[in-house]
Length: 204
View 1 (cartoon, rainbow, N blue to C red):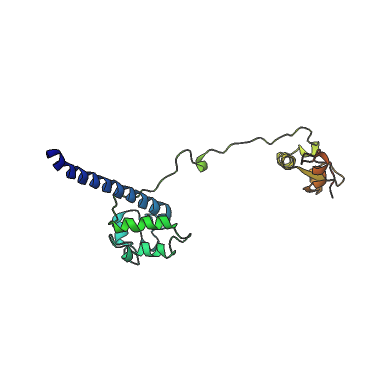
View 2: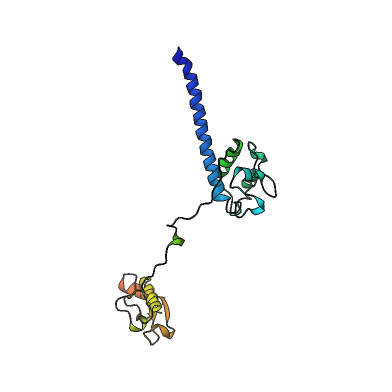
């Protein structure tokens, strides 16, 4: 009999543990939405309209239009109402599931531990990589006039890769104002989709 008396207590404890885990997940999801969608304008640095959503205290203090939300009252929360109306964020309405997460989070009292800290790029971020010097290509058979300048060599190589051909104007070099155009005739002639000898194929 004693075992059966303990059983309801165990069920209650398990239910409370599951509720706590669900609340923690809801808080994590809500904070992730605020960080991703709101902090660029309403963070510690920008504080548009005086609103800082990086922490619970500052969010409840609100900005020029009052508190951002009222814990337990989705209908009385300015932030949620503007989100549901599609007025915020200014870049576009939130997806429906994200708005529902915010609604449930506020409804449960908007639990919030700590602050949302701004993330800094790591050393592997693309803009922090040192520039790399890449030598200009020197394709086989490139005309001498095209090999004098690294820029000309890049242009010539790009034209080769792009299956382009040159409309002959009486010169083999790039400095004569030659016109370049896609050669449908050359593409059809060799069956490969590319001009066989860029720089000499004449197109119309």
